[in-house]
Image 1 (spheres, one colour):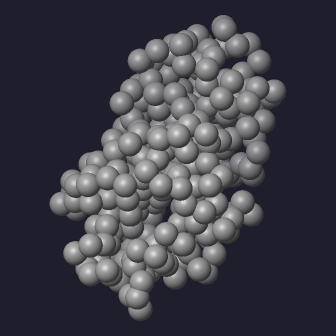
Image 2 (image 1 turned 30 degrees about the vertical axis):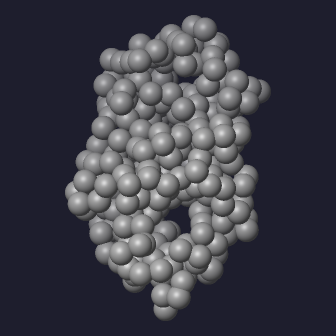
Length: 269
């Protein structure tokens, strides 16, 4: 393959896609990403993760230094640990949405991700260690400032079930999706998606959708996969993803992204 045939932009989700189930990125994947970067392709991580969960992945970022985080709400400079661009939920809308959800689904628990801080209700079932500066407060205080994401957790419902309940409650006021977390729905500002921020980033690099390949595994990846010229769903992906992607890559635990990149970019050394 000649340089002109390489995808100019490689966009990939992290958890369930690039990252293995044990939370690691394999040496094989790191080597494949660096090979693609040496060939001239721009590689960008596009994830639901908050900014603080990107700092251990700086080696993957590349010369441009940025990642798209919080489901597209934040364009983040990873080495500088600084938000470049944000699209946040208006506090009044966030409160209205939270109250509507709680009235209809009383057992829900709320948390928020701001560009620089995490917060949660006291009852929120946190599946990961909380940052030292976590704001523990009622939802009214949590959403008093603009947030990148409003997290809605239910102790017994599956993510698909919870999303089906939440979506008609919030309408078009916000964007509701999920990234595969058990009983977790993630709410962003209206119009925010991985695809929207990725399209802006691509335009800043002079790259079109047709020159882009994207990898994903969950419902929140669907807009990005639809935007990219060529889409790959992981073998372990959500059925909705596998139903619409152009191609299927091996599972994340089989280094599926690396396998595709190795095929596309060989014999780049």
